[in-house]
Length: 437
Ligand code: HAX
Image (tube, rainbow, N blue to C red; front, side):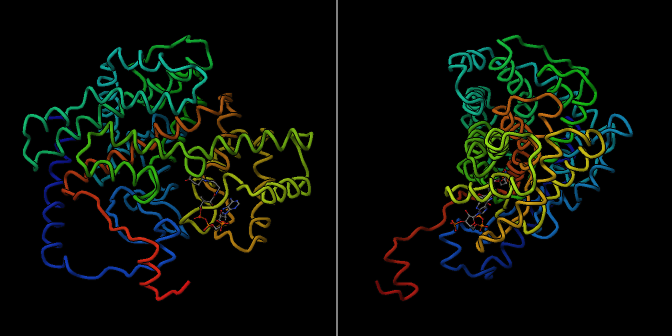
């Protein structure tokens, strides 16, 4: 048996038993009451999900299995001492709950390179059937669905698999799917922006290094950036749109391809993953309208106020849970300050950071005026030459697979039930809170 799967089986069974026992003994206990505000504002703060891979603290930011991003950047295995952690190691940590050795990370790199070879040709036919002008997320999500013909889970289910074994074909499907996403993403990138001039994968490279290679970037600098990008976007606990949707669809025992494609449709929304593209469009318009790539603080302030006056959001700022600067923003800024401190876009990002929070605070309604991950990610990619911003959400999606799909395996280990909350009419709520029109 593969060594990751073997360790997963060892850690999985006792935790599943623990959950069952706790529910048997305490299943009737009240966790929390729900307010009308929470129902209408998108269930913010309602405790209703179980996710082990990561936890988001409003004041501190994300921790992956208890480890902050700075800890991961120093403790996860790397290729070179001065490099960034390999995302394979973060996947192992999120899935197994233990920091991996370099040998375990190398094993996953090799395993993913092996599994990546099996993409059926119809997947590329399906991509090619779409107009090149269709957004890369349309092509990405369609390709993920097209790959579901390969689902181990669907086949095993139809063959009458026992419930207790669900996690096993789910693991196989997740490993296949994650291994193949860089090829799909790079294929779409080269199709849309480089006239179908495709580059084969190099099985000797790591997962993120290979993605950079297949996109056409051979320098160690871009590979290092890609490893950082893939680690930073991997997970943000269970309630964000892409994670929650993947989980929700999975509770119907949909296969990993169906579940992940559903999550990626959520990531494609401008308030979620597509915000990285929105930021670049906002910056592009700012530069055009002000007439300089090096605007003053006053000019940026006026532009930000004008955005709000048009009834729009300032992309890259605000968050549903965080109440401080997103550490994923700070870590990218730290990376940029170290390697490309004078890049004009990074300079612009820094000045915007000095101005926009104050503008948002002055509205009196924005709960978090600080930058999120998307406020800088596109500027960083662009500064390293990856300037075609419609691909940015696809890159986010490749990374997000690591977190949401490791949780999907755990959903089947834990035997999480079909998700089915209760809905009511407006009149029911009026009656409940004793409100008269
Ligand atoms: N610009 C303008 N207005 C904003 C704002 C921003 N950046 N952030 C919040 N607001 C507004 C909201 O639209 C809301 O207005 P209304 O009451 O008129 O509806 C009000 O402030 C209160 O919102 P909130 O409670 O502070 O924020 P929400 O939890 O409702 O929304 C969002 C969180 C991330 C969607 C929001 O901050 C936003 O739209 N930000 C810009 C888009 C963005 O950067 N999205 C990426 C988020 C990170 C992520 O998921 N990446 O994938």
